[in-house]
Length: 399
Image (cartoon, rainbow, N blue to C red; front, side, top):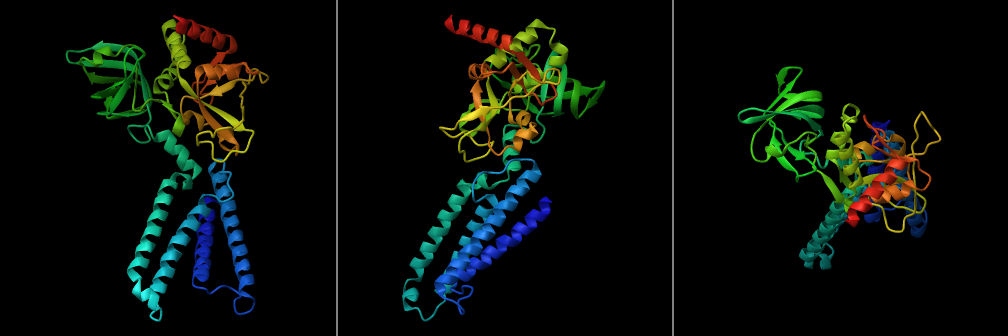
């Protein structure tokens, strides 16, 4: 399906180029039969039909990938075809014009015409590069958001420290790994008390065997003992993900500390220290929240929300109580893109919001907040718990 659409769209783009060439070279269709103005109007109508066909196939392609299409009359493929056709035809027509021997004016001003041509092409290329991200597929743009803050491409892992043992010159850390870790990786260490710092993985043991890499499970890792690693404590998180929590202008959000702790919530939730740590981090974090635009909105779900856009927030429910509407919030785009039905919504928008703002939205008929509802370990916070956390934060601010 997708390959067929690409081939057909490429063929149509080629036809567009040919038609532009005919127009530039003044060899317009029907010229020898009907009036030139009529042939020009017919030519424009053909172009509009061709671009409409390209846009329609662009939307079909995106839906085949599982992502909503951009809500503009000329889509990504249409913009690509238009840009390349104009640039190539301008170069072609200019070259043909400069070779005209009977044109004295051209012969006398060849250098100036060539310079103007280069300036026009340069500005066209600059415009194209600046808008390049808007010409990528929805899938590519979302995957860019997911993987942009990874130190090691397509590995994206967290390791939660559950036990620490000391050797003469090393620390042995035991805990749960989620993702794909390699020996000699340099990872970030996240904790509540200290700023993030980096350590290097010297060795990995899994299932009582030393290995070069490990994936998803209980592992032991060895790091060199120094002044920084002495700060590693129980429930610290080691990750190759770079934390991002204040980048609203480009719609990025990464909370590897919370993401890592939630991966072990099923085995650590009985520990009051662990539970209070998770709740404190969530209550002081920025979260990704998804909504459906109720006003005209240009852009896609991965684009920053435009000003003066009204939106209705979406809910999820549990199989135990389908009448309980829960507000979903997400730590990162990897967690959000698992909401496949929302990825197909043409009017879907995303916002990065502080916990206090999310809690205020919850008061509008929601029975609680759930963090990463479509991940391996959703974290549900009932309405009463959310209100208690908010009151504690307000008391903390008053001190």
